[in-house]
Length: 468
Image 1 (cartoon, rainbow, N blue to C red):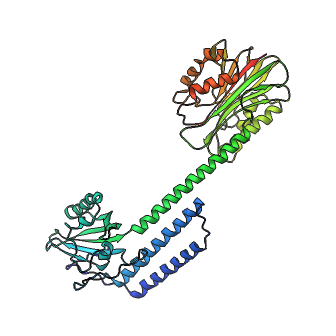
Image 2 (cartoon, rainbow, N blue to C red):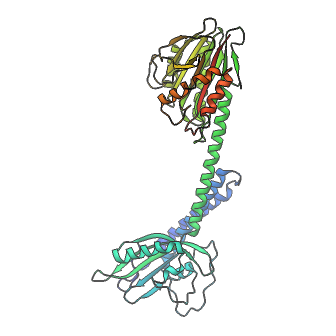
Image 3 (tube, rainbow, N blue to C red):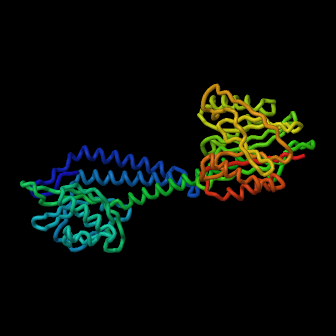
């Protein structure tokens, strides 16, 4: 705080004009440089990033203008108000800073007040009028801010607490301004409060600039989030199977799987997760079924999911069995530049023997429904992908029968429930799934049951019915 303005403690003399003038020159040169860069910057009001940059330039210019004004007052000292003035000088323009900072002292012993000329301009009052006393000051403050001002003044006078806060005032012309007040008590020789000294600063333009920066920053963040979501959705749609409705694999032969799948979007986040499902006819006549989830959200995760799914397809097409395939996937994630964790289940179905060979990596086991009754397959050992180097993944076999329904899903398919409860709720659908004729009807039943629930993350589900 600057020194008090009181009879017992006279104001210090202004510092040397030469040193302050040098600082003023530096501040004005910097302001000119910032203004030049601002004017040279292309401005496209439709671009959120450019609106945010322009608002930041404006805020920086306002702060440099404040610095210029403060240094000028430091050099010249506080201005006095002549008691003979009967009319206010021409008001400064809205962009002028001449009325931004003023000072005042209220003498508690004589109930007198002393204001600087700048304070009259801040409050829009006639310089010929008497300054407002502390009791009268709330009359120019907005109703909702009066209690705040009264509390600050009381704490200062009673408990000797410095004042540092803002409130809004209404000028005689009806214009509302935001004022920042800093003050402290002036004590007499007995240690009692004799007066209160304060500096009041008009921060209206500064707060508007800060608000503009905040609004444009929020707009930019929304624009980026929208763009990232669009890119992630496009990437996910590009790599997930293009088929809609039911699919029969393999395409040739009497022994086939009737397939249907769906990805259910999160209702609480705008970002796309790393969930996937896949079904692919392999070169040896077998069918690949897989679902998985890469932790995180956004374009980077969607890109990682695409790479992981591409690796699954490539290794499966080359004849890699599910257990070894999981080991290679784990090594792939372990070697990536950006650490990631994932879970997956991978199945190879051989139609001539109806044999399902599968492995999992920290993922919910497939559910098998037969004759209206469901059960969870016993999962072979396997940790999360990327959790530890050199992990070994076991695989299991299951012989299916005509009419069996296999369900693969990611975490969160049944939101709001634990993993165990989610499995039980899905198994409870067994009788209804047994009555459904096609994989698409089974999928619709699952989606109708759980698709409208509030979910915190994406989820995928793939169903396969053994046909003959």
